Amino acid sequence: MTDDALFEIDELTVRYRMRRRQARAGRYLKALDRVSLRWNQGETLALVGESGSGKSTLGRALLGLIQPASGSVRYRGQELRSVDRTSFRREVQIIFQDPYQSLNPRSPVSRQVSAGLDIHRVGRPGPQRVAIGLAALDAAGLRPPETYWHRYPHQLSGGERQRVVIAGAMALAPSVLICDEPVSALDISVRAQVLQVLAGLRRDRGLSLLFITHDVSLARQMADRVAVLYQGHLVEQGPTEQILQDPQHDYTKELLAAVPGARLRSTP
Ligand SMILES: Nc1ncnc2c1ncn2[C@@H]1O[C@H](COP(=O)(O)OP(=O)(O)OP(=O)(O)O)[C@@H](O)[C@H]1O
Ligand SMILES: [Mg+2]
Image 1 (cartoon, rainbow, N blue to C red):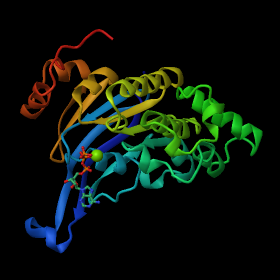
Image 2 (image 1 turned 30 degrees about the vertical axis):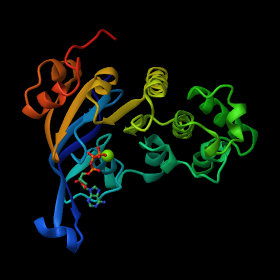
Image 3 (image 1 turned 60 degrees about the vertical axis):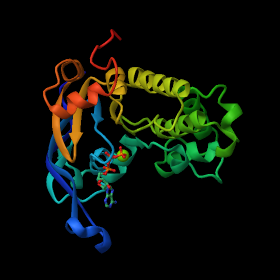
Image 4 (image 1 turned 180 degrees about the vertical axis):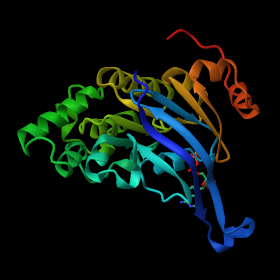
């Protein structure tokens, strides 16, 4: 792991405009309030916090999908808005919570996995892209990959669908992967398998991983560092061990109390 900054977020504030009927408490909802956070290259950072705390908003802001009200996001030392979009879109991939959202029900696995390759012109069309796609399925634990290539999403289990999503992202050989609640739609045994796939990819490819989760035990399992969001405020950040063993903020203590054993870090 190096100490080079991958993303530097400085005093980031994001507001959503509310519809008139919802706007009793004001026209804007502040989803992030002056959040400052550093995510280093090669690091797995867990972003934890309860529902509505602003986790996904922060993920979207990192991708440049949201215009902040104030503050800045830098990617590899450069203001996000001046970063070359084409290479950024290839380098930085995101996996969402619900694989149904990310997959087109009318497209076979082959299309889902090779769509990004076509867009970014990775490899030559034809056999070379097929080979890259099959290798990505294999790396995502769908083996043998040929048996999945022509299937449609409805012919896959939830865990298999999420692996297809992972394969689609990994086919582009990204250096950065943002996982927004990647396993919360999955049952417990499948969850462990998908986490294993992610941990393996991180190890083998040196990925920088942002793990967005409301589940502190997943942060313990996956992350080098943890950042805690509470109602749009970043209340605490630090090495996983330090945050879990010696939380400073009351909210972090509450989060940990809700997860039996979260404070006792088992040896990995
Ligand atoms: N497009 C939007 N328009 C208006 N408000 C939004 C929008 N997206 C999110 N919000 C609000 O902003 C706040 C933060 O939402 P966000 O999705 O970032 O939370 P989260 O931490 O990811 O929650 P969850 O764990 O439920 O996914 C919430 O109060 C949410 O209702
Ligand atoms: Mg979310």
